[in-house]
Length: 392
Image (tube, rainbow, N blue to C red):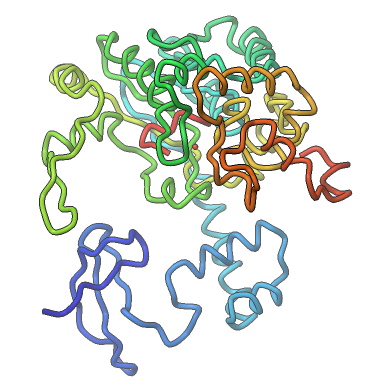
């Protein structure tokens, strides 16, 4: 039996051979999951999956045509042609109006980040105001700057209409960690599920009408988000599990973990419908920032050195963000240190500090590492995914 060909676009092994390429006699294949055609091997680098995306990323980073060609080992002419085609396709795509679904309630999921803030402005301009609801899932672990920003925008643009949702089981991230006797980690991000997804689903299940939930998700943010769709079913995990509760792992079928609120969601879907809409799915960061600055709805934390403004800090925070938190809010570091003593676990994963001499680095060890080897530029210049993607 011939080995299956891995799809370079969606990483699926559910692909079939589809003839040979004329001239090169290379094996062609088609993925049965994403439907895309590709070759098992390419003679030229420019035709490999991901090359166009890399050209687009390097272009946004300000890399020249010749440098891009040198890095990707392709012709400068190819880079220039692809850039022009990408620019034209992008302009045409974002200029098209987003199809607004015919539902009774339009719900904007706002976190205070740049993408959801731009979504808030878009909603005020394009959606019917009498059917519009703005929802903020409060983790209790946001920055005071973010809370102040949300309150200011709520009064200035929303006339106090913001709906704040909180977990009924946990007051904040620290309370969640204490009750679970551990902090979240990159492989176990239960913080998003418990503090954001659960409150949102509980609120939706209380509504008695068709709903469209809008998210500021963009494809360029990560590979996982790139595999999403601009429009989808909000309760897709529940629907997929109901159709096929098993998955093939290590040569045998295993039952998948049941999604949260599966029974309640399936009963609710018998009478109503809920879709998830992502109007900015194909937008780029520069256009998002332009829209936010135009209407003065950009979180001040971005100008203070933070690349994301979800939690303060997030377990995925980078070195610069940890250093900025220690400079701006040293009391937050002490709060984390006290929580580490109560739970017996470190806030950040042990691998956060590379080549550490500590067996289990605590928050003060991580802060010390964050201030180590700081360049002059870094010192002078202030600088999480689930299907529901509630973080930002």
